[in-house]
Length: 75
Image (tube, rainbow, N blue to C red; front, side, top):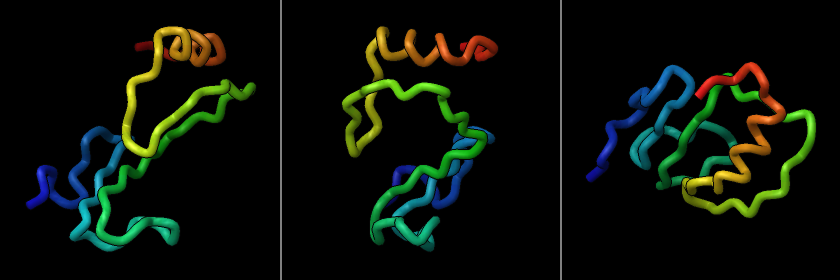
């Protein structure tokens, strides 16, 4: 049973689709959870980071590098 109802809005910029909902894009894996992000800003410079398939917590150094490129962003 799903922990989060299908297509529940977690934030105005994050939408969650459960395995029972229709695919959210042509690249979506069937029978899997998907987070659909809106209002995403591309960074001017790439920041090397080792990501993961699942959500992960960035290191403080990585967050500092990102915030350096987004001077108007507020936590």
